Image 1: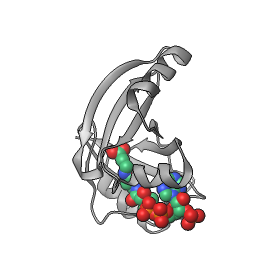
Image 2 (image 1 turned 90 degrees about the vertical axis):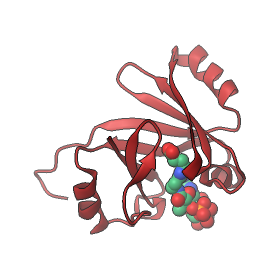
Image 3 (image 1 turned 180 degrees about the vertical axis):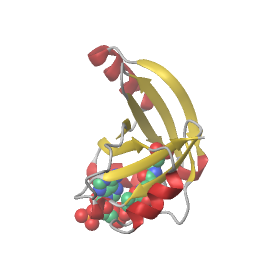
Length: 137
Ligand code: CMX
């Protein structure tokens, strides 16, 4: 990338889990994280819960349907870190910029959890890590 590119702030880390309630207890007991927000994202077939760290968030993701990307992920790889999400100010410009170098999974940004526009970079073009780019609406 260019020398002038500023580091994108981390928005959250997504963790695929089989049971969101059990996972919440694990993070509460281990790190004292409280619940920030619950939501069902129908388009992604997931139930999500954001946990509040001091300067970060953890997004727990539980599939609500076997066709969900999260259900496929858990079937293939088990529970664990599913994606990392970076926050941007102009998601349309970032999509144009990143599409030149990376495989972007959406044609246009889509509506994600927590009132955000999002898109994903395929793990195959990010060394095995799924990356979400997001912008608050
Ligand atoms: N992180 C790293 N690798 C992943 C991955 C992930 N999250 N999901 C899949 N992969 C890998 C698979 O292990 C597989 O690797 P191999 O070819 O080495 O076996 C490869 O990617 C293809 O996997 P697949 O099961 O054939 O492909 P899928 O049909 O599951 O699609 C992907 C993979 C990334 C295109 C799909 O999961 C996707 O579109 N993800 C973006 C949307 C999403 O994840 N939504 C969930 C909730 C989002 C939210 O609201 O926060």
